[in-house]
Amino acid sequence: MVTLSRASNGGSPRHLHRGHGTPSRVTSPVESVRETIIRKLTTALAPDALDVLDESERHRGHGGWREGGETHFRVSIRSAEFAGKSRLERQRLIYGLLAEELAGPVHALAITARAPGES
Figure (cartoon, rainbow, N blue to C red):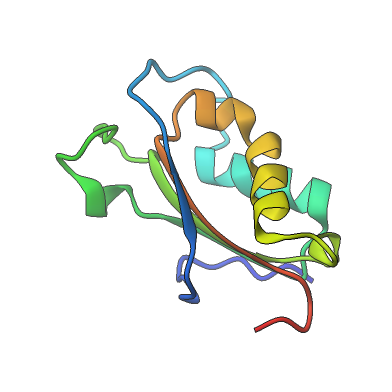
């Protein structure tokens, strides 16, 4: 079961920021960047919990922010795929899955990734 919400569960996420760039076409006209992130992570990692929060408005006027948002995200995910993997391995896995979004519209991504049973 995947729980999707707009609220973050806290924790101490790691951040990825990238330079300015032109957004690429990584989503369909009907799928938002948030929906694309949810679809990709759900398909690849079969999480039992997933929160994807668009925090773009909190970064208004900062680097990478654009009108319309969908530039700054916080992901909290719990998946059995993370069992036995280090924090760095988990982050690299997620960055790889979201490479198109990170090369295009997503300027910053904060990640909290846990295996079941981890707090």
